[in-house]
Length: 115
Image (tube, rainbow, N blue to C red; front, side, top):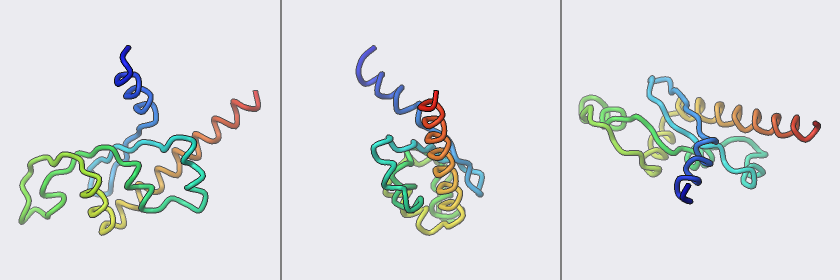
């Protein structure tokens, strides 16, 4: 297996999907273990932006139905930050789920260490 494929599989093991209140989905990736101490004070917008790796958004989702078309928009971290910074329900849904995923990971790791 080549390195790119191996990396993609390793990163894919940390990925999960968050369904937003508007029924759209964001694909997120749990940060690697070495970055988890940055979350000790909580999960903030920077964590949510950095963790996002994909979505199923259209122009209409980002610009409103009156302006945007139903064409899918390729994922952009810059567009995601702009969207989630002005959409508190989406930010809260992603923050909550990211915190759950990190907590579950740490619990599993602690359980494994006990055995």
